[in-house]
Image (cartoon, rainbow, N blue to C red; front, side):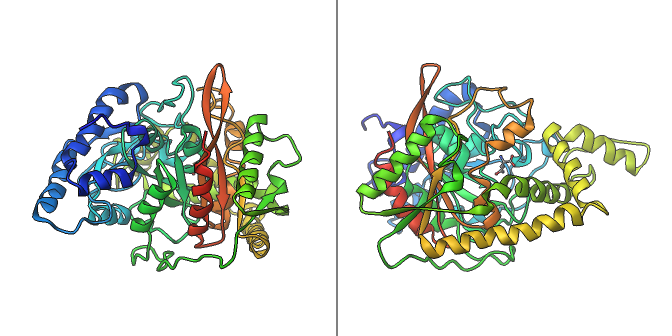
Length: 477
Ligand code: GLN
C-alpha cells in the first residue's frame, strides 16, 4: 500500500479503501495511532489515547470478512472532545474537579457513532468545561496549533480540531456554545459545523450553557462533516429539546446575505480576514449565487447577551460539581467545607470567574436587571434572523476576526478573549446552524496560517450550508 497523506485523506477515501478491501480497519486505525505517537507529545491534542482502539476496529474487520453491509461510518477513527461520555472511560471536561470521573453510560452521539461502526481513538483536550477560545484554560496544559506551535489552536474544542488537522484522527466531535467548533476549525484549517439547536442530542454532553450548547463534527472537508452530521442528528427521548430531523432546502437558486454589521464598514477584523471574506463572496457570485448586503441591527447585542446568558447557565449547571456527587472530593470539618475545598481546588480561574458572574446575574435584585432583560433582548435578536431569512437563504461572514493568535496574548485580558467570539455567538443565541470552511491564508511572523469563513442558514437548513460550503472549499488556499 502506498503512503497515505493523512492531511488529505477523507471519510470517502477511507470507505473506498475499506470497502474495496485495500486496507483493514485495524490498519486504518494503526495509521492514526502511529501519527498520534509521533505528534501528540508536541501538540497535546489528546488527553488520553484509548488502548482498545484496535480492538474496536476488529469488529469492523470481522463484519467485512463476513460480507456484512458496511455501516455508515464503518471503521472510521474519531477524536472525541473530553466532555462527551464514553462508557467506561474517564471524562474530565479538562477540569481537575472531574479528573477521576469515569462515565457510566454513552452519550447519545457516542451511541449513534458506535452503532454506525465508528472507532474511538481517544478523548481530546479542551478549555475547562468548554469555556474559552484558545484551549489555554485546560487543567492539563494547552494544545498547540500544528501550523505554528507558538500559537493557540482556538477553543474550546482545540484538541479535536488539532487531531483532525494533524492527521491524528479522520474526524472529530466538538461542542459549540458560542463558537467552540467553528473558531478552532478556522484556526486549524478544517471544516466545523454547529448544527441547529435541537438537531443533535445533548444527552451525555457535560453541560456548559444548555440553551446554547450543540455537539457537531470537525472534519477535513464539507462532505465528511455532512456524513458525521447525518449519523449523529435526530430525536432523542433523553433530550426534550431534540426533534426528528427533516432536511429543509430552498427551492430556487441561493441568495447569500452579507451582513453589514459584521464589519463591512468598520475596522473590527484583520485586513487579510476581510479580504478573504470578500473573496469568498466573489467566489460564490462566480459560481452563480446572488449576494446582497443585508442588515442585522441587533448584532451589537450579541456579545453582551452571550456573556450574560452563558454565565447564568454555567453557574447553575456547574452547581452539581460539589465534591459529593462526582469526581474530586476534599474532606472538611462539615459539608460546607467539603463544598468549599472541593470547588475551590477543583475549578480553574475561568470556570470560577463565570460561576461568580453567573451567580451574581441570577441573584435576587439583579435577575430582572440582567437575566430577564437579556432573555427579552434575545427574543428580538432572533426576530432579526427570522426577518433576514425572508430575504436571503444564507449569510456569509468571517468566522473569527484574526488567524490563530500567540499563546498568552489574550489570557490576561478575558474581555479581549471574549471579543474573538464576536462573529460566532449569534448562531448559538438564535439557534441556527453555522459552518466554518477554510478559506484563504494570512501570514504572521513569516508563517502562513489558515483563515476561515462562516455560513449561517435558517433552522434545519444545514444542507444549504453544505451546498455553499462545498463550493468555497474548492478554493480553500
Ligand atoms: N469562546 C466561547 C466562550 O468562551 C465559546 C465557548 C464554547 O463555544 N464552548 O464561551
